[in-house]
Amino acid sequence: MPVEKRGEFGYWRDPLCLMSAGMYVINREWIKPNLHHYSPFFHGHLNDCLFVPTVLPLFLLFYRWIGLRPDDAPPRFWEMAWHVLVWSIFFEWFGPVALHQGTSDWIDAVCYMVTGVVAWLIWNHDGFVMMRGLKEQAR
Image (cartoon, rainbow, N blue to C red; front, side, top):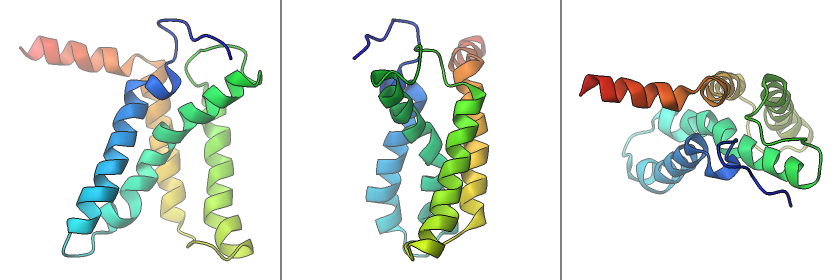
């Protein structure tokens, strides 16, 4: 297993990954069970929006461990786009149509794509550094 360098991409320790995983647990365990009326966003799409920022770092860490990823750089655009494409095909077409598991919903694929691009922008353009700087300027 390679040792991750300080200041490089944190994989599962990345703040966006941790926040997304935390939001997933909160939505699944507290929000969805306690909503008295069906909410398409909380019951259907929030977890899809959290999927890429939560799971992509774990896949990339695994690729790093087995030698398929050469460095600990933040996710490259093609890495994010390839995973979004494969997951969209698998979860929104292959699973529902071929395996008869789940429900096909094109909005889920849009959620993967949009949050994948947003996550990539944050990971590659110092999004958290910019957000912290804005908070400090507001004080």
